[in-house]
Length: 272
Image (tube, rainbow, N blue to C red; front, side, top):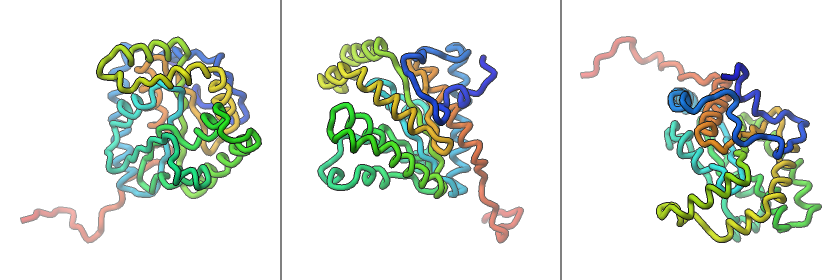
């Protein structure tokens, strides 16, 4: 197993130019599938304990951003990793096509409403980055508009961090062959076919355009305050393991602790 932490191996350092075609989406960085079940189980126990203290302390908001091309495993990550968290303190927001009301406001309006409160771990399944991804690929606004949004997003994230929010962003990387396999599997499974849409194939045809858009978002919006982590996600077991480990390390750094016991509560109390 690698001696270096996954958070160090997979973090996009500020100023780095990301080239997704140079990253192996099947890489496991020394981890073995045979050990992954126990490692993930241990990681989920760790996350559950950290969230419990974070919620009790009610001091730190944590925002987790999940991005990736269609079928990259965003929903699976929420199901298999975020299941460690109590739903009471872990709101999940799934950003789909904006409503007429949302379109009538600035593009960050709908996102800011779902920023987690102190003690919460908020999950964004897709996020504000759609406005430099889908919007760019489909030419929904002029280039001169979306090009400004990288700096705007950096400024917005910096404001959240300055106000106390911890931001951790995961880009789930699969290759084109893996997406093809997953689409076919989704179509062939009667219990999953409802997820399949013909528009998925139209989006797949824009693979290179999306890759370029993702590369710019990762390169321009990974900061010391709000870093991106590129997670090789062809192997679901490693994706889950990596997200759990990195998120655990980030939460550990906050040193969440249970609040002190009310001094009025006696050391030994027997309630009749």
